[in-house]
Image (cartoon, rainbow over all chains, first blue to last red; front, side):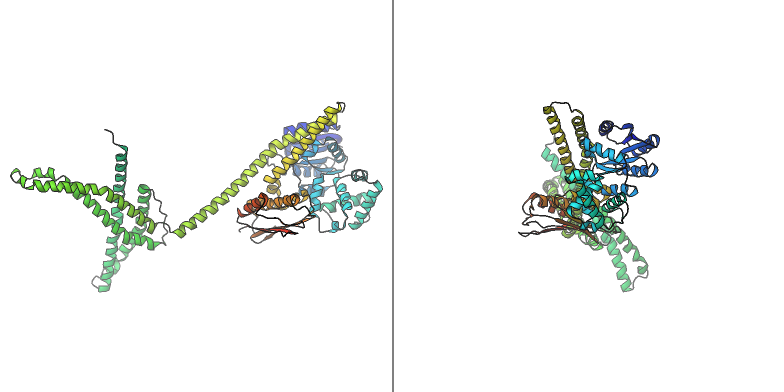
Length: 219
Length: 405
């Protein structure tokens, strides 16, 4: 069983790596390894079995999607290790690829979000605990894509709630963000689930399905 | 002894003219004998006077064909080496012009060249007649002295006439050579268009590559540094909680500014050339644009995956730039706009981009550098740019970019 508080960092920019180590340590993680490319990352994960891997998307040698591919194989080989991808720009396909395997314990944030240390730490903890953290910009981009399907039936407020669900927030988190009561959020969520014709199953599962449908990777 | 530069130049020119004309005599006079030989054989066949004629005829004909091509090459070499004039390499199919030069115009020029050299040789012979007179036995010598003096004067005059005559003949040959063997106006224009098309495509590609390089440099350098700076300021903000409020405020402001700088730089980098365009294509890059637009954008991209050819990077970059500029314009100017519609369709060899908004309209491509730059960039890949923006709206922009197969 991996140590939830153990972390591995893969980031080729040395400056950022140093900063990330500081942030992770501040959040109470123990950084077991910091590496600069995907291969070293896989080796480090195999050796340390961390609770979370923080991975840059663009890394040597190709500087394209090495990080995403490494993240996918981590999710496959060591499902207990959560993965938080950091990207310079939003690429929904990467996010969709990542979420298609398993929605728990994954995150996709823009690199610049690390500057908002407290919020970043919150996302980090959420992912390490098996939740999700999606960048608001990723979510916004997905909204543009899904414009001719059942999502069109949602009201503006319901879309906001769904977007926040996709970011990985709990009902309480959504309520705080939108400055409404938690029961109002629950009402919105029920309405969303109904409009998306999701099967009546347990609430958590339907919630995941709603997000997946929103992402366009399922249903 | 020093030669005055003017005289030296004249001598160099004379030497070149003489060489040029001398090298022309043989190639100019080579074709007619072959031609005559062939002609006599033809006459022989018609007359029935020569039994061997049908067998001999192919020989001069073949020699003529080979010589014709070879002679044209010799002429090209002459003009290039001695006059600095580049004649095009004529194709075998342009035999008419080669025949015209080698068999008709060329011989006439050859005759003029021979005449000039004859004049030169005679002139030299006459000018030196006072020397020759010593070969005549002394008793009769005085009889020829007067004629020898006259011959010398005439000979010197003839020699003096050679340089201007040679220069004139060189000019004439240049005129004739260029007219017969050179490129016609239409061909020249055709070549020019080909050249310009190629060099413009190169220029567009070079500008694209340059933008890409700058994007990478900014991405790997300044952007990473800024993120690191903002991160450190964020850390300071989160950890140094016991600072006096003034110091906290300063850190706060610095943190905010660093984040703004990251946003600004990201916008700039995306405007240059978004990396996502190279890595994941137009569709993905456009959805990023649409998501960041301040008004809701409905995006439809219909580029079949089985397109016979992938849209070229230059065209994709232009399409991206068009959508990016159009959405920026909508945000800036179309104040009443509540939504925008972007449709990108690949229709065979055409990539069509249509952007519409429900704003108040009245946009004029003649004003505003944004729209002008947009139209210019579309033209750089031979695309067409149309815009309709009546006062009161709606505004529609339609761009068609060629994607040659």
